Image (tube, rainbow, N blue to C red):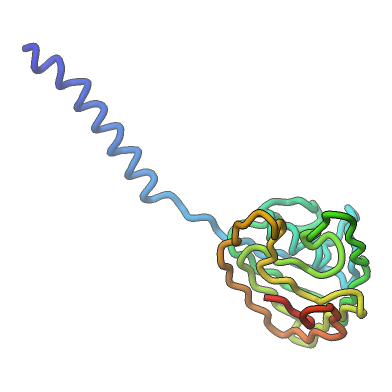
Length: 173
């Protein structure tokens, strides 16, 4: 009888752990979101429209950092709905110790896996000679010795032009 009394809690514990493991095994993985860019302007503003810069920041953060755009979640897909040209307008003016702005200024830093789809009728991103256009897998702290994990980025139906940077051209990988 004493053995039976000791076995009941062990059996319960094993049953609870088995149930928890089954729940984890069948849990849905993080799903990517579609984030729709609605305008061709390059601004960061809470103004009821989603810009490419805001969409990339949300995708990087897996959150609705800019509430005009859908929240990022996993390997997101950014769809640029209007056809035409997006001209980068937020100047990169780094200060002392400022190594990166995570897409808030200058180039569009991409730090998580994503796909950017331009409009089938034509989408151009013009860096306006302000900076490069994309900094893919940007390391926000190059002095910490930690390399960011690899990411996958796909660019479809985009023309990129007028990127300028002192060490690389329009795209840095």
